[in-house]
Amino acid sequence: MFLQVVSCFLCSLVIERYGRKLLLIVSQLIIVSSLGLVILTDWLGWPNWLGVVGVASFIFGFCIGNGPITWIYMSDILPDVGVALTSTLLWVISTGVGIFFPWMKDTWSIVTAFDVFLGCSTVGLLFFIFMIEETKGKNQQEIWKKMGIKMKGRNTVDNETYIVSDPEMFNDDHLKLTYKKDDSVRVKNE
Image 1 (cartoon, rainbow, N blue to C red):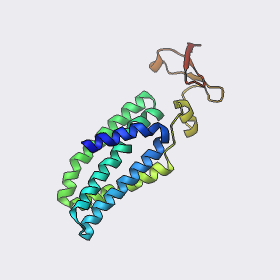
Image 2: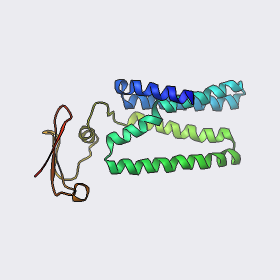
Image 3: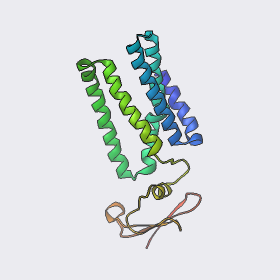
């Protein structure tokens, strides 16, 4: 518990300085390395304390990046409805891991379960390196432009004016949102 608190606090201190992508990559590198250490400890008969160091490193790696930044990144790149749906999916997957880990451990072995997690974590590391966009210091519209996502309705990013036509979401036919350089927002009906 102490390790989780310290690593999450450390993340909060450095996230705006180094950015989300770098912390996610560092976090995933620590996770992959720590799972590898746990697996090698068993395979090669190394002292058990190395396995404990691997597990502690995994917890540190998760809490410095993947744990807290996942929530921040979702809110950076998705509208509110998307955040709600992906949060639900994240909790369903986490519950699935919690349910199936004991089964994997009992059916195969704990090391084989860690092998599966190492494979998934390695794929995650590659995804973070090649697919994730940095969102530090950018508003949602700048992020969407860089990712090639267009808002519903007329979208003119260059003059920083957005027309959103979604009566169900805004209870209006057209709202004009103007984003200024200081990230202030002006909303007016057209």
